[in-house]
Length: 470
Image 1: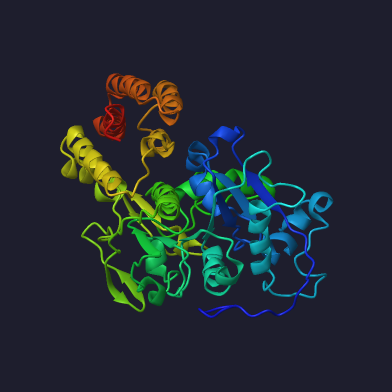
Image 2: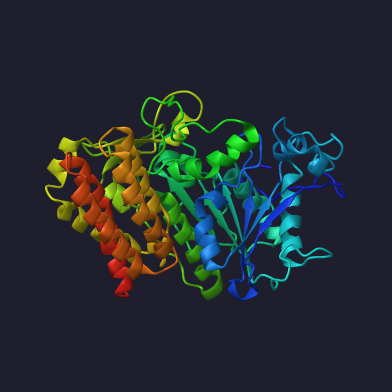
C-alpha cells in the first residue's frame, strides 16, 4: 500500500501473533489519558523504539502511557529479530501467516488491532489498572513514519482508531481530505538527505497539518545514540556508529547535539491540545534551501543552516551542528557536530556573560514561540550536555580527573534537583559548580570559560523558571 489512495483488502481472517510493549504510569492518578502508540522501527532488522528513546523522560514526567507495536516482519523474523533473540519467549510469534505472507502487507491491520486492544481490550488489558484512554496518538520515525503516512492515507479513514498522527523524520505526501490531525517534525538532515520528499515538504500547513523543521538537527542524533547504545551493545554485541568512545568512521565528528527531542516533546503536548481542546499548534518557518531537487540547505559563513526552528544550541553555537555528513553506513543520517575552537569562541563571546545573555534569550524565545514544552528546564539533556563537555576536556587533558570529579559531585546533585522540578536547589548547586570551576580550573582559562558558559546559562534558565517565567 502506497500513495494517497484508500487501501484495498487482499485477504481476511489472517492469524498472527505479535508483541506489544507497554510503559504506563504506576499511579493511575498520574495518567494524563493519552497513549502514544509507536510503530517500532525495523531499519536495523530489529525492533527499535526511536520515539521512546527521544522522549521517554518527558512522557513519563507528563503522565503519558506508551505502547510499542511490533508490526513488521523484520522485527520478529530477521536473524536479529525477537524470535532469534529469545526463542523461548518469542518463538511462537508470527506475522507471516506461517511464511505465506512475504511482505509487510499485514502490518497495517496489526497496528490497527493493537490500538483497538488498547482502546477496547478484550481479556488482557494492556493498560492494566489505568482507565481507558481518552486519546491515542500514533508516532513513528523514519521508515515507520513512511508506514504511518501510508496508514493515514489508506487505512485511518476506515479503521478510525487514531486521534492524531506524529510523523518524525520522514513520511510521504498526505491526502488533504481527512480530518485526523497530522504533525510532521523533521530535522535538517531529513531535509538535506531527501528523506522528507520534496512533494511532502511542499504541503502547506492546514487545519489538520503542521510541519516543523529543526535547524542543525540530524536524523539520528546524540540523544538517540547515547540512550539506546548500551542496549544495542547488550543485545547485538556492538555500539551504534558515533557512540562516544568508539572509533569514528564518518568524515566529520558524527551526531548533532541540537536537542531536537525537546521540540518533539512540545509536538506531543501541542497535539494533545489540538485534539482535546481545538487549540491549533503554532506554525514554524521551514529551513531555507537553495535548491529542491536535489535539496541543498542554505548556510551561513560558519556552515549553520538558515531559518527553521533555531534552538539556542544552533542560534548561539558552541559547536557547528549539522544534519549532514559523509562516510560509510549511516553517516549521511547521523549528521555532524564540530566544536568551535578557542579562538572562535573568544571572538564570538568576549565574555562568559555575552554567551549567557544570547543563549538564554534564544531559549526563552523558542519557549515563548511554543517550540519547547512548558517543562523544558526539567530535561536531563541540560545536565548531560555539561557532563559531556567536561568529559571532552578531561579527554583532551585540559581538565584533570580530580577537578572533574569535584564538578560532577555538584552536577549530579543539580541534575537530581532540576529534573525533579526544584529549580532553586538546582541553581544553587550549579552556582557551587561554577565556583569550583573558577577556583580549580586555573591553568587553562579557555577550558574554565567553556564550563562557565554552559553552567551559568543553565543557572539563568533555572532562575527564569523559579520566577515563574517558564
